[in-house]
Length: 129
Image 1 (tube, helix red, strand yellow):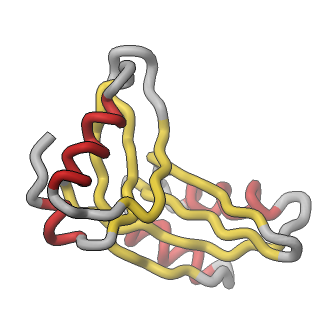
Image 2 (tube, one colour):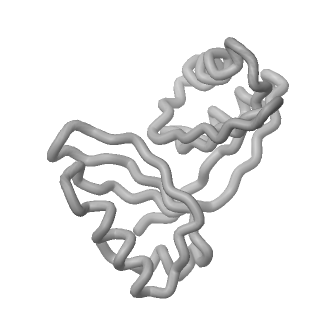
Image 3 (cartoon, one colour):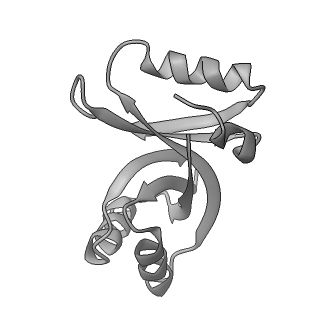
């Protein structure tokens, strides 16, 4: 599996904040390839992988948003029944714990981008799909 980097952005939990963040990323000419949002009472956290994290990160910082980078595993899985199960089993067999997962589904039979936050990036990167 491939190593990657995710951006985590803290947003106020109010109307328009996600639109503002997504607009900043779009103006930077970075495509959001996979994303998840965890909500809280006052704040939310957007985790995402983009086509150009460097451009997205710079633009988000310039817009005054708090951005944290962290290593993740990024896999391209065929959108078909059992694809995620097979990848998760391989990580488990390698004794890698999946701490969180999110992604972006393609059409049936096409590639989906799946992002794994794992306990051991180096070990997970050696797992073959």
